[in-house]
Image 1: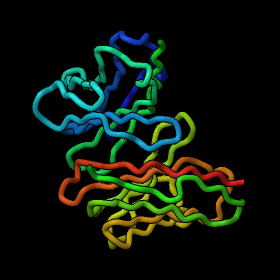
Image 2: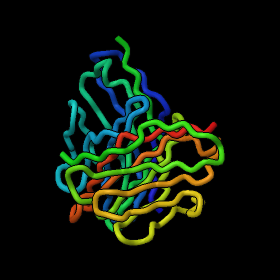
Image 3: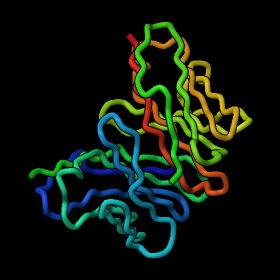
Image 4: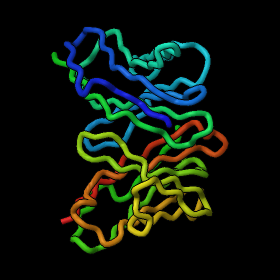
Length: 113
Length: 116
């Protein structure tokens, strides 16, 4: 069965510092991996995805993620955090045969000024 | 880009009434739509997968008679919460897949349901 783990409920960083939001996954076959961001009382906004190709994926708002097959991880990163990055971040996975996304529990990112 | 809308964005109803939530793909045809439920500060839980012109596929534990899903066209899916109760209060989010591009999903803004 597919699953996604986000081990941190909350990540706190100071503005200007690099940030990492962790995600590990379990799926049979090759994974399709996604990161979404959610602001309060809003739907999900797509940040980036890994389907195939380069392990380092660049997405919206300066975010990037690195696919690591041996560690089954897909951590979200940003070199310099902004206060406006504060939100709830979800990692999601789907296997090649599936259609629906399976989401992690979410990680709240708090960036302080 | 592909846009998905939901209506209403917020609804408050009395216990025992039914509420219909619409999910529309505005600028593309969606053969598949998904309905998720999200409790405060929790992840999205898939409720059902809806394919145009056929019956929805419900996830285990989701009552199909309580959460009626209709996907009558390639741009519209509806979720009706029948005989709503306070425990049905939640944030409901739909997503839609582009026809022929099943690995891409676009999410609606969500509908907050409060049952008194």
